[in-house]
Length: 596
Image (cartoon, rainbow, N blue to C red):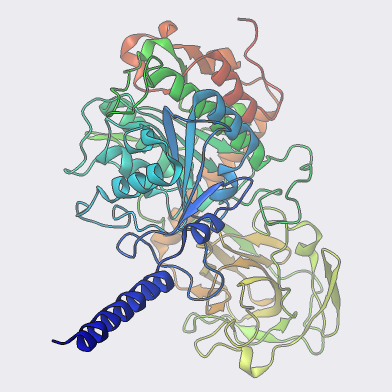
């Protein structure tokens, strides 16, 4: 090789290196670009994860950090951290002032996992890569310069569909889990899977659910599950029930018109629940995290908590404080029975005769009672409001129950005027009912809809009403001005009956509407029995509301005041301060614990 050839070779190599560096610069964000992914002032650190760790990022829109981190102002070290996976307002909870104050006092960092595939959720079998979280925490330590993130113990949080995260992290890493929080989320399931690694650790846990959430999940699933953990593990668990709330539908939920506004009297605010969860975390860290050293060189051994040091809450305290009859809690050979069991074939009984003097007005559709179809096809229908009405029609219909509209009649819903018109063919579902995917359901899947028809019955007989619902789809049927329940058996005499449907929906259903089903003599007998029991419960509820309920100091007691053999049958909180805070969330009639 001569001199000219040598120079040409070096030029080629330099060009190749420059191109490679340019390619790296284009593919990888610069330090300045990484810093720009922070979201100050709440999240001063933000960064992207390697593709091997990242979850499913949005296909469009600006690049956002996969992980956001906050530490107390001026902090150089931490003793603990809070892990929050992304879902709805979980990020906003991580910014809540009371939580940040607790974090500052307890030297706790907060890690928000916006787009991270945890590898442990929504899997039937043992997670194949449970240590993925540790890879993320190494990156957090590098990004913040705080080495304790590599080994610090954690509190885990999860909302709704991310509800497996907090308790599965506790199953897999019990020695590192201080406490766990399930917020309107899945219940720590029971029995434990074989791959759970629990060895008697006193992990503190709380479930916060709405009173009406998922048809009563707080007493069907949460209560028996947590009592099984109390009885058969070292967990110190309890539950919080937000009175009058469903699946996180607080009047001041983040993103709603009520965010940041005072809530109506007697209504639960999400901020009160968040304040309580912050207090719970403070108690947990104080009880379990050693205060004499930091987890700089390796993990800390968390302290075990003496059950006798806390307060115990009667498992029926919520019903007694709300002054409603106690809801079912059943035990079997293997512990408390989780779930409401199979859906009952009937929900009650009612007998109807046509309203005196009622006849179908001109222009109002009439449909025959027919069990061979999956819904009625002829309705007067309002246009759909593109938002869900505030009132739950299955709980509070108000004057709507009296509606018997004619074509062109109007109704006002929260300031919006709607007119009833004959349903157009494209909105009739082929199998029966009202089609929602033909223009009635907007992209955000949030609607309010009213429909009316007249039911014609040719001979006396019994039917079972089918009007399915969920927490997100509220479908109330009204016959003769009387609200009916899904699976209620109805006895109808020959004649015509006004039938109204009121729908509030935040879900994507293809169609909506009730239908009638055949019933057996056994179904009718069971329906009568079920109705008699329901009437008895209603009378008992009225009696309870008119009488003095058990005082809180009977429902909430020092653990040392409860026989040791009974303690595992009750929920646990850390001390009187937390017990009083819990009571404050469950005392609609102003109950207090009384003198110390």
